[in-house]
Image (cartoon, rainbow, N blue to C red):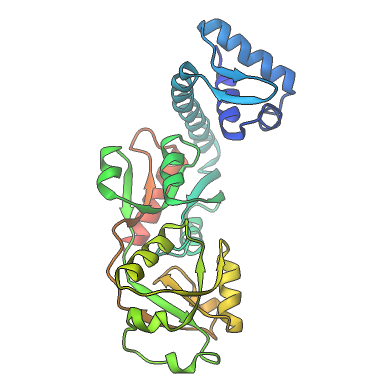
Length: 298
């Protein structure tokens, strides 16, 4: 058994396809297949359900895969540690993010980048549940999303809760001049407006739907999309108004837009910055977390 076989196994889990897993491993498909079969022979168990295509892992394969993730994560952390000793902190951090958290990710990356200018980032947008799975499987180094904080503690993650500054309605005053003002808006006020909202599988949208449903109100959704960019365009041209956690948007980017606080109960899940427990987080992730935490607590 060697580390490459375990890396191939992890790549196969991520890609769910032999050809794509081979490409991700920088080997030919026959090479990947032979190395994985050799691993099965050495362990004496079948790891993969094979047919004409990849059909998932056996029960034994799932157990081996859990170990493989841990070993590969430690191995990659070792490589990064050695590189940082030789050249300073550098490399690419894998970040999983849930849309519409109460923070601007780009602003956080900019602040951390001023301290560690050689860090690069690969950002994947996920649902709240997908993000917790990705953190557990070590397929992302950093998670920024909505979590149940007791669950994070039970799973021994390090976490820094993000400040909850409430919810705000974002609109273009040219199209909705009647919304200008300083008093918080009630849910009844929002129910009377056309809205541009994220699609229903997102945690923040489910949170909104729940409170409007409990209030006996129906949302008028003019535009529904997975893209924050499309939401902002819809708001800008007057298709409707948007609802966001305060702090999620950099309002300086769209100075023509205005916002107004919404009176609504807080979310049951808490927005947080999360990494693996001390000693299991990669050096890059730990340095990023420490720098980001210092900025958040300033």
